[in-house]
Length: 204
Image 1 (spheres, rainbow, N blue to C red):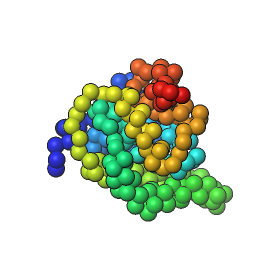
Image 2 (cartoon, rainbow, N blue to C red):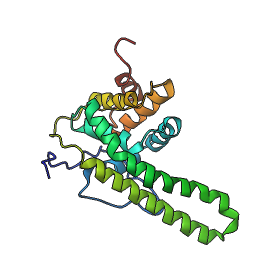
Image 3 (spheres, helix red, strand yellow):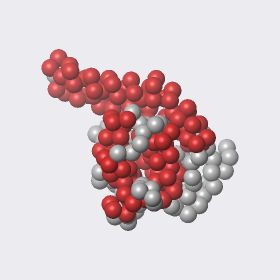
Image 4 (cartoon, rainbow, N blue to C red):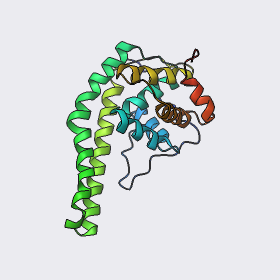
């Protein structure tokens, strides 16, 4: 394995772990996953990521990766992002998205199962979905190797905007607010306004 700058994962101070009844898998050898659990559990981040997913079909794991790379001061170029998108696509199309669809479809069958049985099934599907998300993140972790550098929220913002540009998504006001929530989750010291300004072009 290439030196990944001994990626210990830069988990922001004050961030809360992701809360799920089934419990996400703990993967100490995958610093990206551990970072994601901490940031995703921060107030407002999960709703922001899911809103971007629903509006534009963006991959939450790639949004988190763009942010994580910024904690190492790493800029993701167009070629890097294309490699990451290509690596993530099979996981999303064949595993993660189908499991998400099953979890959502279960609601339609709520009256066909006793509550305890329905709860057990939903939790098993949620656990499988979390394992699939972790599998995709492990795949992404292995795509690129980059040296550690100074954490730079501006670099993370640029990575996020580059990902949206690659997907052909000009950020709306709502998109900018959601991206700012993600940045604030990774850098709790950022005020909401500071996070937004990082995402606004200088000439706008």
